[in-house]
Image (tube, rainbow over all chains, first blue to last red; front, side):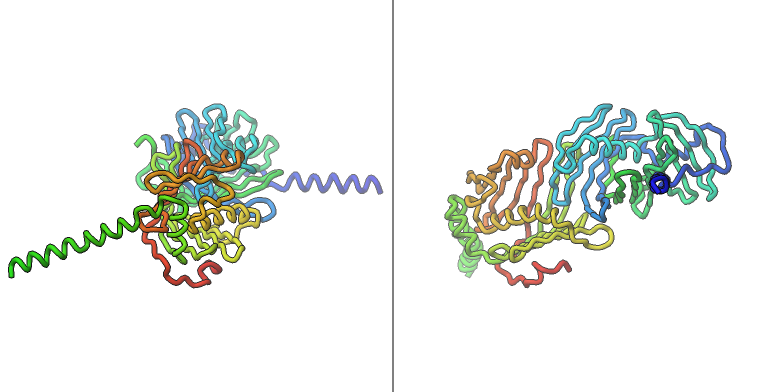
Length: 224
Length: 211
């Protein structure tokens, strides 16, 4: 009976741990020459974005905040401010190789939150740091570029035929931990090599699951 | 005839100037003392006004603009509504506070905890609109020259969130022209009020319903 309970527990844990989708197979491999289309999601100049961010948290809680993000692809720098609709700043941090938190109001005052937020921003706007290890097309015809990052994660850049794109991040055990999807909508910035999506949807899998829907309010190229 | 005409024209030109001068004289002093302010705001039963909110951040190359409208009915009913870019409504009426935000699936009521935080903010606004600056439990108020009131948090913990709030009073007795909230040197929120309608009837539903 004891053994049976142990087996059930192991089985439950196995089911729990394998809940996330695994690495999508590449059906038709392509040469590893770095298809330029895989860089479509990533701006190559300094930008500043203002988004309304709808956060869905565990337990069904939902909140809306305003996010201001500044990115510098050349330096890898990130500036981020999160505030209420009424303008109260909840979180203000910079990352330029090291993190500087200027302001953090509970429950956003932990270093884990700050690191997680900056990591999410880097995933959204910066190309993966690491070599291209595979590329090709998936079953539905989408282009996939697969990178192995310095942290040991795998990142898939997926460009669909309609130019919508996805970024999927997998842990070293090939379990999906982040999924970012775009919806260019009708607010695509015209005449840019890197269109700024009207909507981004980030889903985090794992012990703390959440979903963020970012609707673009303003996009400003800072070098202008 | 001509002289008469000139005289009439002069009277027409001078008349509004005199009226303005007299009105100006009446207004001078309404914001010089707490008693004057309380007296002026005591005549106000309702206010409806549009507002523009400018968020100034060191990270932003130009201020982030939000727009909205608010309704106030003495002593403590308030509807504070953002119409763009994100619709959000704060309601306070008969001691109850509610907050609704457009989450993309329509206006959704925020959690109780979130509303509790906003209750304090709304109570502050109602206190200001009622002219009760010197009775504010959260802020020390100082009356400055130029119809300016500076509020500084009484609690040290609170001053980490807000350094001070500057309120500019309008020429019109009892009306606030603008509010500036200084969180720190890199973050200021400026609220500018316009199109104020005073003592017009406001239906109770405005403070109860979100539509």
